[in-house]
Amino acid sequence: MSNFSDIVRYIGLSTDEAAAALNVSEDEIVRWCDTNEAPPLHIWQGLVRMLDEIRIAAEEAAKSADLDHLEATDLNRISLTVPGQAASEFDGPKRAATALAVATLARVFV
Image 1 (cartoon, one colour):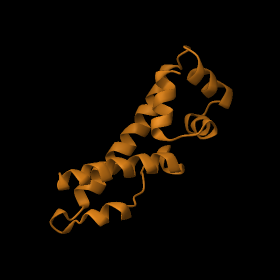
Image 2 (cartoon, helix red, strand yellow):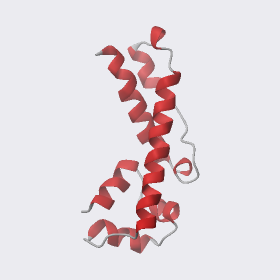
Image 3 (cartoon, rainbow, N blue to C red):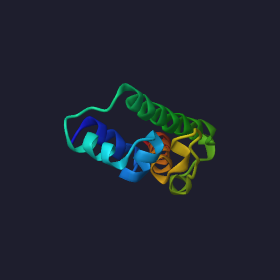
């Protein structure tokens, strides 16, 4: 396993989705995930852009919530989209952004 693999998994991309999002072959994704060989800088930058898109979507969702009327049951109904070219095409980034938004909003009840 590699840090690259951890980030791809965190974002929630399958091997073929990561290859499509980063415009490389599936073999390259597998190699970077399963060995110590690191991808080139532009690949890391692509992952950072996706992470930023996820973070921004989560922050915007949390900011737009009506905290005065938020109930715990509302946390299970949050749905959002992830803006951006790469992250918006796949379900994994949407799930990651939703998880971050829900975690942020759940802090209201702590």
